[in-house]
Image (cartoon, rainbow, N blue to C red; front, side, top):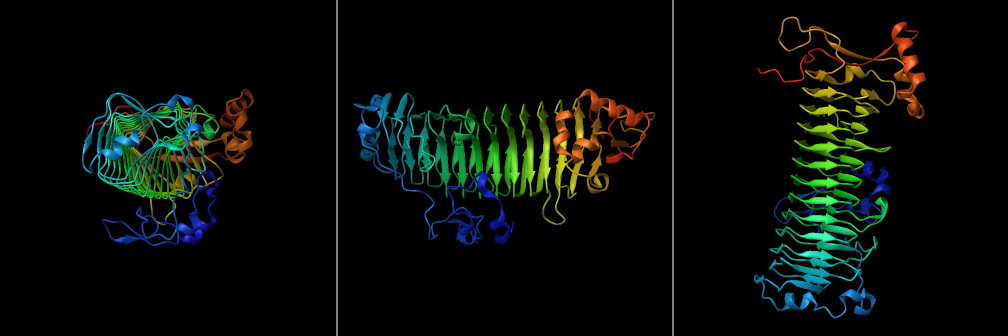
Length: 457
């Protein structure tokens, strides 16, 4: 984990505008069920600062007229005993609602509408279960984090909720061991940059996020949050499918992310796994399936990475000394560039992957002794120029990727606009035909797979 001096110097303008990040990094806090740790822990009950800006109160006259005359759902909650199960009659009720006691609400056919002001429902308790509710109509203030479901408690269950017309979808802060299953979340119909996050997890550990659909939101984010599991979710038409920042040991498995700008981004993290995911059509100027910024010890395994601008974008990763990032058994297919390494430090292990149909297999952001820094072995390359005379499934000669005219746009990013243009193709052809400069070796795979199918051992 990074030191405080490094954190204080980090450019956090992209995400931490609402938190005093530098001050929080100095705190020593404790998990209510575990030993005290440094700032990566999630429980901040002893912290001398608040984590929320005050939630404003709105009169009924300030809310949309569609909620005037509706029965307030808060009346039903107040009348229920702690630990009770509440099954309200189907219909539309007025929000907002605050739950501050253990309670189960079975809400099939129930809509709670806050009339486009503030937050729809606040759960500030443990042992709460919400099922089948439709939450809608939050405000649109980023300052007060207007959301459909605001959670400040642990060991709660939120299942099969429909969340729409809300700036933020589900917002967890200092909330551990919650389960979020089968929820459908969309943001307000705003431009991408000013939507709220479909799911935001802040200083929250050991949560299960499973089988949810997050569409047309901004991001799904986990900041200062460790050991959370994201399993079987679907993300569409958002910016970041999942964005980790100072979040260690999270697991991302079996998800499907389509048409987002970025699939999964690991920023300032140590440890984590992404396996069996499909990331498709991460396009645009910054589009990538998996991104790394000063992160270490991450395993990327058995993923389908297809039709993306960049399959993997890596910057100063792995970051920690003697650390590694491993890419194993992934398929990189039909991407603009399968893997792009910027500010290369070495320490990446790329083993047993499939590279097919990519415009560029591997690129580097600047001149680098690339071939000696990373480990490549047993990958399938559709542009391999060799044979397998002994039939063992391994190419008879190593696969070398050399950079000729490609060095122009790799070393001068502004020239990328002309990549694959006729003039660049002609220059590359002439370079390969009669080299007038020494090509740079990008990688060498000593045991390339000759067949796309894996050879049984």
